[in-house]
Amino acid sequence: MLLKDLEGLKFPDDYVIKFFFKEKLDVSTGRVLEFGCSNGNNLMLFFQFGWEVIGVDKDKKLLEMGSRNFAKCRKEHNLSNQFDLICQDMIDFVKSHGGLVLDVLLLPNIICYLSYSQILEFFREIKKAGMLKKGSLIFIRTRDLKDYRFGKGERIDSNTYRLKIGETGENGCINTFLSPEELAGIVEKNFELEYKHLFECYFDNRQMDRLVGNADIIFWGKVQNTTKA
Image (cartoon, rainbow, N blue to C red; front, side, top):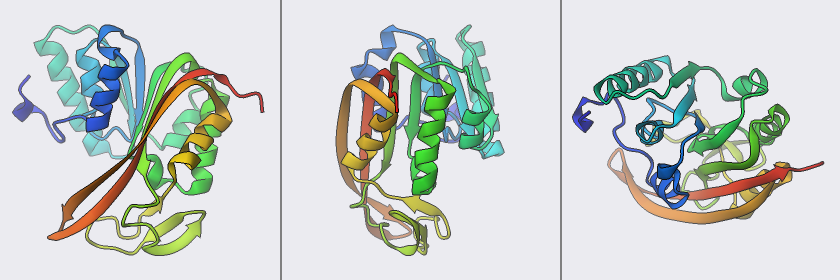
């Protein structure tokens, strides 16, 4: 399947690619779930290596694009693994899917659109639902306190703002910003980790003819157990 034939986004997140190969996910298979999956551009990497993929997003049109992409890819390359793209709120999905056990959970550029309180609730619900077992991997990319958007709007929760900026198309959107240590702490409050990797990524981006400074945290780790508390 040629890149030009894909509907919507063409490439996975650059750090999802690093995570995928550094964790040797190209030589194993299992079940991966991504929240905020868009048209499945990240999940397509897993799918082509034989993984069962589940994507959750609230944008029905993007999910329809993704479904066509996966169906075409599966047909052209005679793949037998399954895909399932679901239109649902991410917290509601977790609450309604207790017993769904994952090998990999992907959270790239999505938890920043929850309030700080919702982020805490989200991880509590993942733990409660039993989605991550010993050996499961979790990948997160989210906004750093050093991102240029920080503080540009009405503060509605801890480090959470309703943005008042126009250049990124996020005017009126909720954005929550975390430090690397705070993000790691939220994960480790719910899951004991065998190991973790934590990065900060800074880059310039052009938005509506304006150069802006983006700052992201990239986190991934392997679950050892859920915490007792």
